[in-house]
Amino acid sequence: LKRLNKSIKKRNENHKLYLKLLRGDIFFKNFNLSGSSNYGLHLILKKKNSKLFKKVLNILGKNSIEYRLGSLGNQLRQPYLNRFVNKKSIISLKNTEHMHFFSVYFGNNQFLDQSKIIKLCKDLNSLVI
Image (cartoon, rainbow, N blue to C red; front, side, top):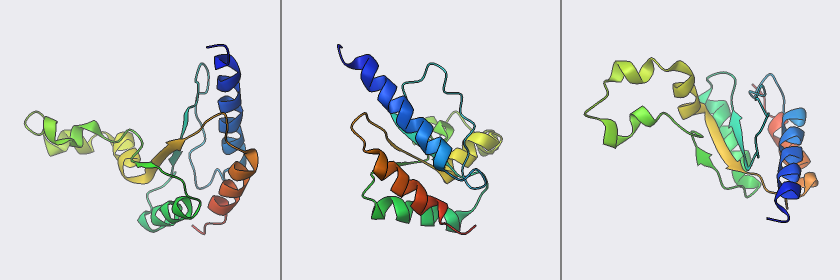
């Protein structure tokens, strides 16, 4: 616990660096960072684009970054809710559906070297829409 505040501060700095460097025409960057510890980054495409999303995943793989598809995903799509939810309910949640198909989530820790953040953002920013 002695190092917790310092670790949180460093993760927040990393997160802000990602948001500063990533292209706003490709990625959603309007996050409310107030009170967050930013232990991960949600990388969300602004617009639906399956080909572009595959390129994003390829870049993450080439940079040896493990990720989770769909960030939080649309929980209404999970099998345990099948008997309670109909398809109309699922697709009515447009933002949740967008995140389910066009976002990834990967870790952010206080030991992450800023040069790696800069390189990853440069690689992601080189994508052609």
